[in-house]
Image (cartoon, rainbow, N blue to C red; front, side, top):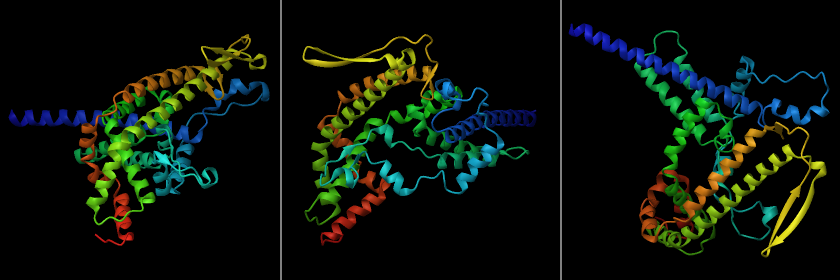
Length: 370
C-alpha cells in the first residue's frame, strides 16, 4: 500500500510539473512572437497606419501581413547569431549613465552634466531576451518526458527571459501593447523591482558621483578608504540635490509625453487644417490654446497607433507624475542616506567592478599606489 501511495504521489507530482511546463511554453511562445513582431515593426503595426495614410495609398493595395511565420522566426534568430540584436558593452555603459556630458559638438567648453530620463536609459535590444527564450525552447523541445532537473533549468531561463524583458523599453512606453498574459507576468517582475527603486536611485546617483570624481578631482589620495571618504562627504550633501533634479527632470519628461498624447487625441478628433492658436494671459501666466473644427468622423488611429493607445499613454504618464511627486516629497534624511551609503563599497566592487578598478588607477596616477 505504501509503495502504491508513493507511486501515486510521484505520478501526481510529474503531472503537475508537466502542466506547469506547458503553461510556461505557452507564455514563452507569446513572448517570442511579441518581440519578433516588435523587432520587425519597430514603429508600430502597418494596420495602425492604414487609416491615417489610406487617402495617399492605391485603392487595390494589398494589406501587409502582420502574422508571424516560421520564416520570420528564422530571420530573427539568424540576426541573433550574427550579433545584430546585441548591445555592445560600450553602448550599455553609455545608456546606463543617468548624468551625462552632452556630445562635444553640442557642449563646446561647458562641463555641465545633463540628466537622462529613466525611460531613455532602458534597454532596446532583444539579444539577451532572445538567447534565454532559445535556451528554454531547446530544453523543452524533446518529445520524451522532461525530467525534474531539465524542468528546473527551463524555469530559470523562463524567469530570466521575463526579468530581462521587464526592464526593456517596450515594458515602459509600450506596456499597454503587451498581450494580457505577458503583461501580468511582466508586472510581477516590475512590482518586485519597484520595492527597491528608492535605494537604487541613491545607488545610481552615488555611482555617477564616483564617475565625476574620477574625471574632475585634482587632489592626491593615499588609499582607497581616503578616496571613498571624500566621495561620501560629497554624496551626503549632493544626493538630495541630485535626486531633486532627477525627480524634476522625470516629471518634466512625463509632462511632455502626456501633452504629446493629448495633442494626438486632439488631432484625431479635430481637423488640423482649421486650427487656430491663441495665447491667453491670466494671473501673469500665459497659456496657449489650440482650437479647430471637429472632424466629421473622428479617426480611430493616428501616427501609427490606435487612439485607445494615446488614452492609455495619457493615463500612464499622469499616474507616473503623481508617483514621482510623492517620491520627491519623501527624499531621505541625512541619517537614512548614511545607512544607504554603508553599502557603497560593495556597490562598487560587486555592481561596478570596472569603476572600482578605475578608482584604483586614479589613486595610482596621483603617485600613491595601494
